[in-house]
Image 1 (cartoon, rainbow, N blue to C red):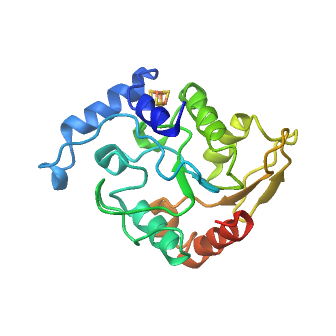
Image 2: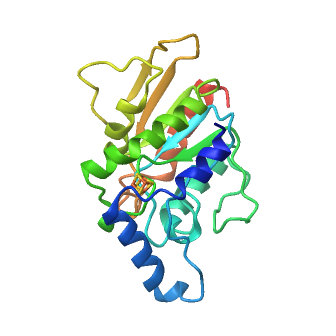
Amino acid sequence: ETLDELDEAVTSCRSCPRLVRWREQVAAEKRAAFRDQTYWGRPVPGFGPPDARIAIVGLAPAAHGANRTGRMFTGDRSGDFLYAALHAVGLASQPTSTHVGDGLELYGVRITAPVHCAPPENKPTPAERDACRPWLVREFALLRATLRCVVVLGAFGWQALMPALANWQVPIPRPKFAHGAELTLPAVDDGPDLTLLGCYHVSQQNTFTGKLTPPMLEAILAKAKAISGA
Ligand code: SF4
């Protein structure tokens, strides 16, 4: 299996009835500002090169962002914030991400999520998180040879990711999420170790209130770049 094949396969997944209904309902009803657009309305695959040294793990696609455009963090304010920071530290070719085909390239970074379908109120259930985990396991297995560092945006992603890391030793009890948390997991095979960096999620709730500022995010992305050699 290649990453392209995985990305193609995930877009046909219908394992979670509640999320299938929601993503399709949002795509049919649309937000007024996007009335003339065709929403993606399907699972959103990860985005970025197959030899990424850094992964960014969020939560799930936004209803009118990635669920509309079909690309992670593309077409909403959370994405504006994230891509501006990625560009500022030299990990993205441009500071904005508006639609598939806008020319954006990521340098050594793969952006993904533990849940690939937009959930109501941005809240997947534990059962939906668990149902989607095999996709994350497969994605991390395909990135195994090059991956050195994961920037985890928020507590949901942090908790969802740990059980998916088959190639690394995760401490028990599992360390808690914190902004600025840094944790290096030794490899259980011959591949590189993996460093996890915790960062507040780029949601508007955090960025509008100043809980997460551009310098805070850029500092963590710069650290990921230094650790991984991306
Ligand atoms: Fe499939 Fe994941 Fe979407 Fe559930 S959330 S339908 S497991 S892609």
